[in-house]
Structure formats: structure tokens, C-alpha cells
Image (cartoon, rainbow, N blue to C red; front, side, top):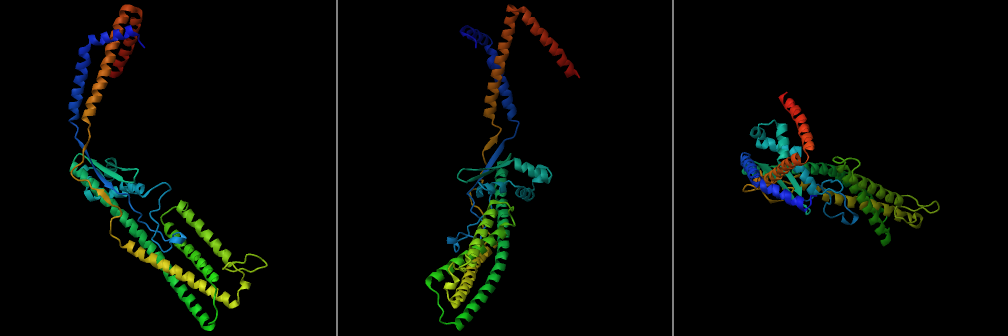
Length: 397
């Protein structure tokens, strides 16, 4: 760090060459700023999208919600949200290729389809706010075309997402329809068996505790079947090691273990059946009635669940409404984002001022060195001369 005297000396040198300090930086700034007007303006148009709802549906629910609405949705990675998935969809190759064909961007940009798709990726972008709001933008030299580009990409993304949702709903409907037919047959068979038994043995009755246990067994079986349907649907679109797949398999296995515990003896000395009580403690007719009632209850509960899901899948399959809501469309042309001429002028002025200051100080140092230490000055001059010819020689080649 120079002392006070050295600082005053540097200021004196700069004051002596003050005309350099404002003329050259100002000249360079004016030139570069004028050149920046040769570059066309780029405008950005933005579409704001609300956080999407869950569109893909699931059959299984927690035990207390078996008769409620679907809880499923698009199968997301851990930590991912529907907004993150929609952001990826908006800039996906499928959407870009569709927009390139729909807007004839190959003709507008004079690029092949693949290059036009990559160019479209470079001139678009998306950001997800902490609240889940999506801000999707498109940039172009024409502000009105930027509006059209942004709005078209959002519209195409919605159509593609809607097609995916409808396709998944169709597969779900077909699978549930098959299980519904099988369950209907099982319910009819169990109902006829129960009816024959009651016609033959009119006096058999079960206490409240046994009926409650039958309800519990039926609920467990319905939950297991619902989980199996959900697993079959998800396995068509998710990897086998996906967290949701693993969780469903674990739950199915745990429910199966509970049902096996109810159906198998728990000790060697006391036979205990699916109701968790000693079979020997129940009369034979009561045992048969309990099993028949369980079969009817399981089939009835499952049929009711599947029928509801079948109707919901049919509605979803034929749905033709947007899969997400747009808060603000791009209209009126967006603001100019490039070139930022004010920043170009300011940056050029600062850089030119710093460079000319360094050159003034270096020149003053060399002049002073020639007077105070001629030998060192000569060595620096010789070093420069040894470098300069080699540079000129290289440039000549």
C-alpha cells in the first residue's frame, strides 16, 4: 500500500492526464452503446399457472376412507411435487416437437425439426415459486410471437397431459371392470350359499361380537384387493423399485399376514379360526354361518368399492377439461429483456476507466524508473523488445 505521499503522487499523475480519464472511456462507451443498437431486441412473454391438482387416480385408500374419493395422483418421485412434474412436462421434447409442428417453426427459423426443438428449449424457461405457482416464459424478437409461443406451449402441454390422464384412466377402468365382474360372480355365489343355509337352518344366530369380527375381516380383505388393483395399475408406469410400489407391496403383505392369522390355528391345543376365537367354542352351525356371512360381507364390500371406482374411472376416461388452471395468459407483448443497453454502457464505462487508469500509472512508473534506476528500466525495455519481435513474427506467420 502506498503511503500518504505515494497516494498524493498517484493522484497528481492522474490529474495530469485527466483528459485521458474522461475522453477515452467516454469514447469507448459511446461506441459500444451505439453498436448495441445494431442487435435486435428480445422480448419475454410469461404465462402463470396455478399448482396443478392430482389428476391420476388411485383405488386404494386408508381403511377409514374406503368409501371416499380417490387419493391417488401422478406417481411422483420422493420430494417432487405436481408443480415440478408440470414444469418438466412444459419443456419436454414431446411438447416441444408438437409445438414445432403446430407453429411451423422449422419454416420460421429455417432449421430442421430437431434443431428447431433444441432452439425452442433455449428460448423458453420455467420457474416454480415456493408456493407452487409456475411461471413459464418464452422469448423472441417479436413480442406478439413470444405471446403466441408461450400460450401455445402451455395449451399443448395441457392436451398431452390430458391424453396421458385419460389413457391411464382407461387402463384403470378396464382392470377394475374385470375385477368387478369376478367380484359380482363371487357375491352371487356367496349370497346363494347363505340363502340356502338360512333356508335349511332358520334358528341359527350370531352374537354382536362375532358380527363385528366379520366386519373387520371383510374390511381387511377389501383393503387388500384395493391395494392389489392399485399396484397393478402403477406397475404399468412406475419402476419396480419406486417407493410407492414398495409401500403398496409391503401393505399387501401385512394385510395378507393378518388374514392368514385369522384363518389359521394359533396354537396346537386350541383351534382358533378366522374370527380369532376358539372354533370349538362355537357350535358347528354357527361356524358355518359365520364363514358364509364373512364371504358375503367381503364380496359385498369389495363390490361396492369397485363399482364406485369403476364409475369414477369412466368419468375420468371421458373427461375433456383442463388438467391445470392458467392464472394469467401472455397478452400484450412482454417486456424487453435483451440487450440491456444501460448495463452495457455502465459496464463499458467502468472497465474503460479502470483500464486507462492502469495504463497511465504504468507509463508514469516507467518514466520515473528511467530517471531513478536506468539499469532496471533498460532490462524491462530489453525484455519487452525480446517478446515483441517474437509476437510480430508469430503474427506474420
